[in-house]
Every structure is written in C-alpha cells, then in structure tokens.
Length: 413
Image (cartoon, rainbow, N blue to C red; front, side):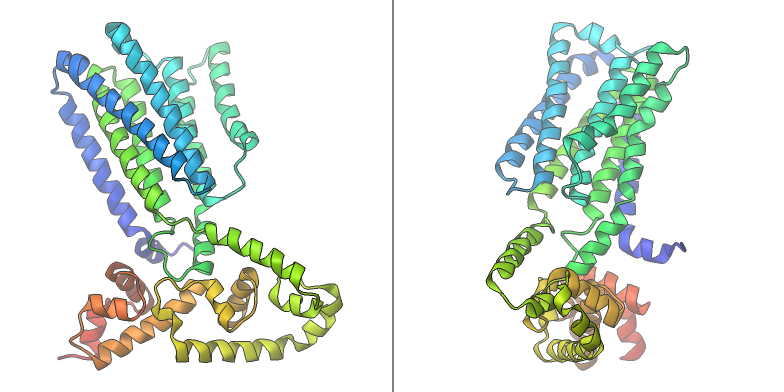
C-alpha cells in the first residue's frame, strides 16, 4: 500500500509539532534536573510532586465517574487514574516511613518491582484509547490477555539466567503499536459519519499516546540512570499529562453516542412497520422477500436518489451547519446510517466528510470571488467550517493552495 506522506502531514502535523515540543521540554527538564541538590530533591521536591500526582489522580477519578454520561471509555480512564493514584500513594507512604531505602531502590539496577509497576501502569493507561477506538471490543478477558505476556516474561526473568529487563520494559510499546493499527479505521469511521472532525478525530488519541510514549521513555531512562533526581521530570510530566487528559476527555465529544440512539430508533422502526419492502429500503439487511425486486430497480432508484440528494444540497445548503451529520441526510434519503455511507461510497466515491467538504470548498471559493475583501475567518464560518484552522487545512489539502494563495492566484488585486 502506497503511503501518502503529504496527506499524513496535512492530517497530523499538529500532532508532530506537539510531540516535538513536548520531547524538547522533557529533554531540557531532564538536563536541568541534574543540577538539583539531592537533599532538596529527596526532602522537598519528591513529596510535593508525588502528592500532586495522587491528588490529581483522585480528583480525576471523581470527575470521570460522576460525569461519564454512560461512556465506557471515560469510566476506564477513571479506573486507570485510580490505579496510578493508589500506586503513588503507596510510594508516598513508603517515602514517609523510609525515604532513604525507597530512594535507593533501583539505584544500581532495574528491579522487578519497577518493571512490574511500569508495565502495569502502561497497560492500564492504554485501556482508555483502546475502548475509545474500538467500543465494546475491550472486556476483562481481552484486557487480561494483553497483560499475560508481560507476566510470563517477568516469570521467565526469575527462572532463566538471562536479563529480560529491556524486553519487559518495551512490552507496553508493543501494545501501543497494536493500538495504532486501529487508528486509520477509526478515522474513516468518523469521516463516514461526521462533516466536522475537530473534536472527534483521532488527533486527541495520538496526542494521548505521544504523552504515554514520553512517560515510558523517561521511565526506562529513569530506571537505568541511577540518579536520585531522575524522577523529577517524570513526576511533573505525569501531573501535566493527567490534567491535560482529564480536560480533553471530559469536554471532548464522543462520536459513538449517536450510534446508541440510532439503534433504539431502528428497533422501534422494525416494530412499528409491517411493510417488509419499506423496511428493506431503510435497513442494510434487506428482506429476502423484496431482494429480487430491489436488485432490478436499484440502478434507477440510485440515480433518482443521487439527483434528489444533489438538488437538496444545492437548494437547502445544509453543509453550512458545522454540526451537519450523516443521519441528517435522512431528510431526503430514508436510509439507515450504514446504507447511507455505502450509498455515498458507491455513487460519489467518497466518505460523508469528503462529500460535504467539497460543497463547503465550492461555497468558500464563491465567497472569495464575490467578496474578495472578506476575512479568512469569515469565509470559514460562512462556508460551514467550524474554525479557520480546519478550513485552511481542508482547503489546502483539496486545492494545493492555501485560501489566501488561491485568492491571490485567481483574483489578484
């Protein structure tokens, strides 16, 4: 499969910049931490940062469990925060009881405790993005199967005379790589159902995974550096990651909520309608009684439906609403969500997101032609985009020019 690097750059350049900036900050912090006196770190910085981590985690648990709105991914993130918070609370209690012994733990080699704790926390924090990308797939059974190889490796590390520490430390990255394989399918699903991806696209999960990568890399370095101050960068970055993640997850729209509503609608639809042929036109699973008749009339019906959809898009301009969704096409095409997506792919060769944005870009071109003095922000809003950034990115990707460059090229002053 050919990789389109230009498309990847347009889709994820903000995530690349995000990762680079965070990496630079973490590297700088790691370097500066070397100049912190050990006494200051052991007696002041460590308890403050660990206390902040515990407090942030527990507050996050309360927020996630009280405001989850029935979303399983939010509940899982809340439980993940609870595990992290309790582990740091145990560490804090141990520090208060015997700070010298706790600080010296792992100072000469990577201990089994550090390996187990790091892998466990990495596994727990990956439960949220797994559920967010594949709702319903993650169960206790599948989650424990993910953890089983790590437990087996730790057991082998005790039995055989080989140092498996590096392999064990890298196991969470194997789970992360498996997670990335689901991201393209998730993005396509979003494009098939929504015309605006600002709050529901895979970008947030990529940022979340970037932060986990940095935490993991710094954790491995922290385990091998054998320096008391090695936890400074890790602790403040964990606090930052928790606060940022809590804010994003709580106020980020969950794209799967509409699916639950539609499932209920379709059940009512099946109970209330007795005409099987009419049900066939609204459901993907065509009834066998109407199948032969549907196949013979399908080309004509599709042509009429295509013309009806194009006329409706031109006359009513529903794409000017940034919240325009696939199910809104039911106003002209009485089909269910899955059949609507297939209809757009078969008739127009694109996803719903691409289909709508073609109209929006044409509207933006018309506005820039008729009102050349209109600001880019106003063009974006008037043509149905939710923000200037999403408008500029989409317009540049489709035309090869930024809105300003296109305006100057085709309508020079």
